[in-house]
Length: 276
Ligand SMILES: C[S@@+](CC[C@H](N)C(=O)[O-])C[C@H]1O[C@@H](n2cnc3c(N)ncnc32)[C@H](O)[C@@H]1O
Image (cartoon, rainbow, N blue to C red; front, side):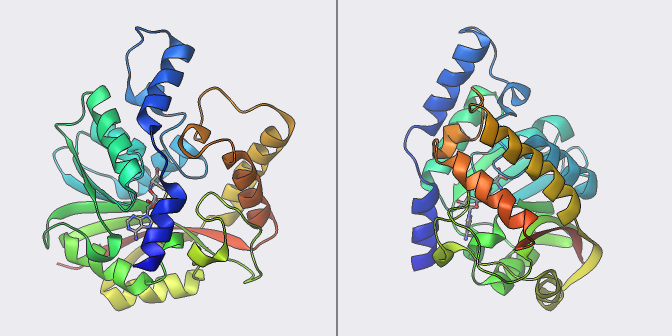
């Protein structure tokens, strides 16, 4: 509980949606429509942004009409993207009240509030029924969670038999201490990285079958390195995820890239299934 309070206060900022909508009006004009595509430069709050969401979608393969669960839904960019591009309903659960408020406001602004439900709650006690979801996904969330077996048990409970979970996880690399702050934590107090081997063992222990399990560190590292070089040499773009966490995000992203480049962090993309 203390961890969750600290995680939510790391992320929580007042006025996120207002800041984002004002920046969009400045960039695109006062009358420009607020669309999923217009928001996509700043509402996918994980490394490589919209590109990473599209890659996860290619693994998850949602079908129109399905009900998806987004565990740690942030300000709702991935949920809006899945709802609009794949014709699904999405329930998002997130710990940070300010992120849930921003997600709901942006769902209304894009006209997707009838297809997306946002619940403020914990991945460790998901406020959803058993066997409800056709598919689930979680992008860059579990590095904030100490009790990873419980995270996977809850995802398993929420999926219908035959349902699948797609994960994009930050994992431990060499085990050396990270450079802080990073986008998910100011200190080691709220950062918990499991090795890819531990991740796979926790998933199997929760009851999942492994469909695919891919170490994506090399490709992610190359993209974040290019982003670091841009951040070190130029101004912040008008539209970016710094509108969520503030200008300090620049140094956090630089540190995150250095951790990957130095082998301290690894990334894994996995698809797992709850057997019928
Ligand atoms: C880096 S953000 C990623 C947000 C979103 N998945 C995305 O990719 O845009 C991490 C998110 O995980 C959420 N989170 C962290 N620990 C959580 C927990 N125990 N339960 C639910 N959400 C959690 C945070 O509030 C934050 O929104």
